[in-house]
Length: 171
Image (tube, rainbow, N blue to C red; front, side):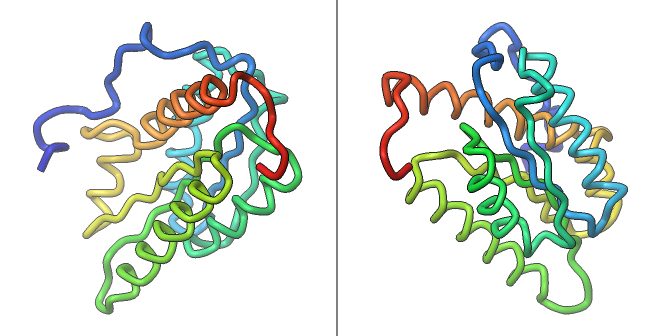
């Protein structure tokens, strides 16, 4: 497992574009709030650290991880962000519910990304137990919210460079 090798939240900050010209969305699931709010803090702080303006970061909370795509779609309709980070945590339990939720969220975010040309970042922890979630929300394996923010910045810059900075009709 790659996360056992190193803290994956470490990155070359100098290689990231300045985020000051981008609008970001963050959708956070309330279920497993201790974990998801730590992910949010890592994400938000990273965006700010790289130049994003607080008034250009729009946040919505949804009840659970299954609702992340719907929340992302609603946020996109209101604020037209360059990238949307979706943060949640699904911990495996006694049933296979985690597989259905994780797959549905992954598929929906991928479909929205492809259809819109806008990045919808999969910041959903899919862990086997609570400790694995803690380890990835600011613990020994870093904070996946930080990684999601870095991805959002890079994808927003890619979107801008591929469109020549122009907004297109329909997306």
